[in-house]
Length: 312
Image 1: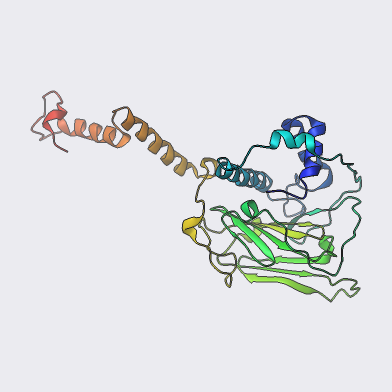
Image 2: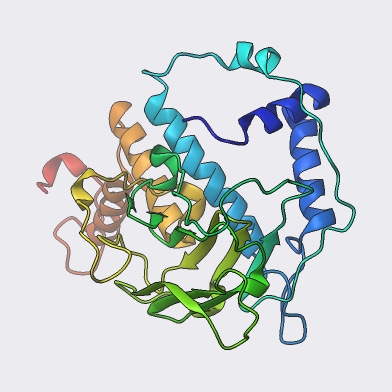
């Protein structure tokens, strides 16, 4: 589960001493160098619709929380040693980090003063952590996708010469994703190469879609499903995954209020059964019987309520 960025993060964590300070630095970077905290509207195209930024953070946290739970029994704990074994790194701050206006909702992530020593003509392999980036989804030739019941996240690899959103055209509709990029050294505005064109298996909410570009590596797309359901494939022509083998966990905080109330009722009823006490359904039945006991025409009218004479 190694990441190309672990050494950088470990250095920051080592300097900040604890997780709280580390998270503060990370979210501060998003404030200074991205439009993460801006709320988009009819007049402001940058940023996210209200609530989307928070949802992105929670989705990432829940994804890795589930991965951690699944691997806890088999993965040795080496985190305590790795913090002090990392190589010394030099962080370069780019004071000119800023974003280009998005085609859709987007964040552009720029590489700060990073020398380009790769072959700019090549299409890089999509290096991913298969456990997390394809969680409940799949790894394909030029893209990886993952899902929850309500959301989708897609990583689509791009040529290494594609560095900014100005070199891309990302078109997301309710049922299709299409991505074009500028060819290397092309000076003509009319020349574009298509690198992804797929019809989605089901509809998504176009207005809630968000995409970002990681320079020379991939485009990351976050989609909200039009209906809460598990997808067998991201696009129509893709081989289907087995839904019986995915993690169908739905987190309590993601549930609607009526669903949360139902879960709480089920948990309470289970506890009542363990204690040998009546469940909510039995309490309702008892109240109905008491009301009917003294109802007009009842053979028990006027007598003390005695449930032992009733069979139900």
